[in-house]
Length: 143
Image (tube, rainbow, N blue to C red):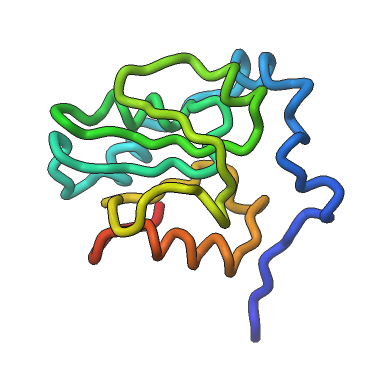
């Protein structure tokens, strides 16, 4: 049996889909379980890890991860939608970047972890996975 990933229709998968609801998204979207954040970071040196949150939306996961790390560690949040980035609450350990999962614009081989909290179903699967492989350090993880 071959599994197939569900993909939204092309006209519903645009980066502008949340343009008009970004403020409500930021205000009402729930946070993630602390155990999920801990699992994503388990075994890493939290004072020196690098994380890319791709399809970051308003940065809910980005901020939670950033609050769980320390030292020189940073989260690079990638989100194609200008309104979603604008609605994001600032955090000193989160840097924001415009970009798509398939072309993040982030440097190669730099990240210990690539996170996709709730956005993977919007990505062009093969191209996004190639991009994540490019971003990760040897032995890095995709969460």
